Image (tube, rainbow, N blue to C red; front, side):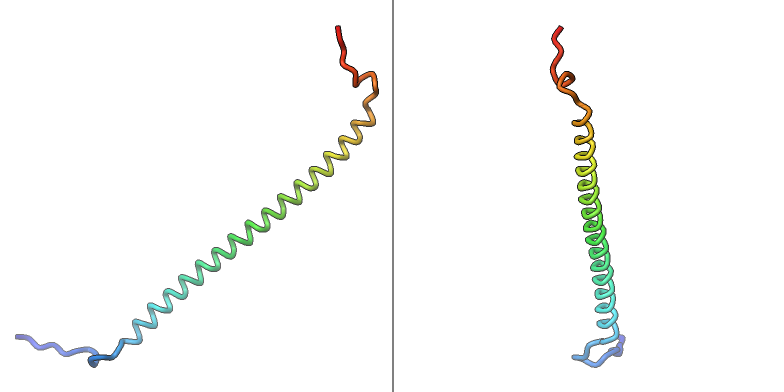
Length: 82
């Protein structure tokens, strides 16, 4: 029978592999958190820009409607009947 020597003393924990595993998980969690933060910031910025564009388009549409109302005369507003 072949005897093998234990690499560590019974009851001790190999702290080197535990630290590496923990560090890997922390780095992965950090990367995920940064990715989620960037995605949230992009979504918030896009939502802000779109609402600003909607507001600008509504204001512009109101100006055009006001200009168009000035061009219409009562004769044009009546429906033609042939």
